[in-house]
Length: 284
Image (cartoon, rainbow, N blue to C red; front, side, top):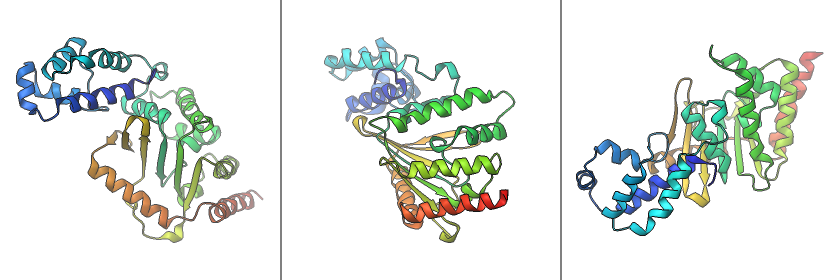
């Protein structure tokens, strides 16, 4: 957990909610003489949450008859307030939380309809995407470094079990030009042979499918932490969805996409190789 304040805050919030048990929310608010919104944030993991003060945690545990948990929860609080590896990059809060969860994930399930997922992008492709979509205040080199640093998780001995489904449209959209796309699709072929990564292409021939109205989503799981969440990235806002209904919905969508997409292995590799052949013909 050290060096990962997002997961520490997530765990602290979950444990405070568990320690409240069957006690009524409003009863605790009155006993603590605090605002209902404050207690709600202390018990909310992720971007909507807040880290309570040390004195607040001590008072909560006294109220819950759980003083024996004080030292452990204060250590979690300390970790939740520590800087992380992304601090120098000045990331937007939701993206920073995502990068922290991704770094500890035991499994990732991701769907992309318009782009190659960030974890699978080559440096040239990533630069072209960032330059095309950046805001006036963006720092291209900084954003590129974040993306390349995130990709290091795929090289770890305990790399997350990763399942990528990429729509064929993302492979046909020429980002950065023909040569960059040849390199990018070639990189996907290499990744498809990784024992910890499964890659499927959702072909045009799949027709109507379960994610027609979705641009992209990622299901992240950190098994040793009991964390499961869906990350949705938009043009101006990003969201984590962690309630059971949303998790069930997106898991169902992803499973249906698995059935609609080409089988991993030879069928997917054949499509990738055909894309490269078409690109090379365009160069001639």
